[in-house]
Length: 187
Picture 1 (cartoon, rainbow, N blue to C red):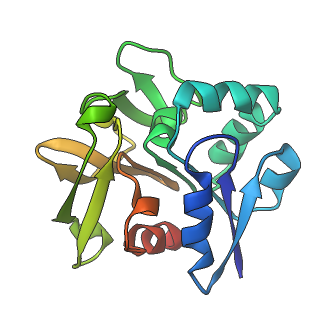
Picture 2: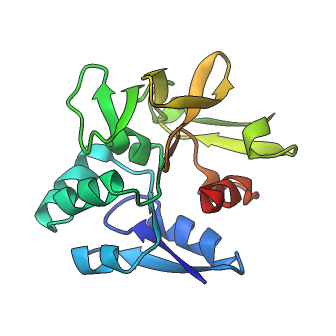
């Protein structure tokens, strides 16, 4: 059974843990310390507030170790704020972990009142139409030579991959599908 960690410092970590608990082939693990990080086979960085999460990563001593683990090949998936944490470039801001060759625009769709959901088929995640939930969501402005675009919505990049790093601007933990989780488990 694979141990899938969820960074549990701030944001929608409880929702990710609940979704993972519904999958029969994984053991969900809350990651709050460097010791917790050493116990997982892969890690999800949840949505939330990227600056707050980054500060908490530093104060808990997880920041540098997470950068190192990602560079060593730990599969890491960032959703929404987690995507921002992974990005090497942030339009108008400073990168956080800076491990994925993408450029991101924070709050690209607008503020809280501009949050929305829709349904769309994203072939990389399967043939079913997926519910996509965007909450103060970023989008990916561009991908570097090592990253690939996985999905777009309305002409904007909403999912990308670089090796074992996955980034989505939407919140699969708030949807009724495990398709993106299954994709991540295949990485």
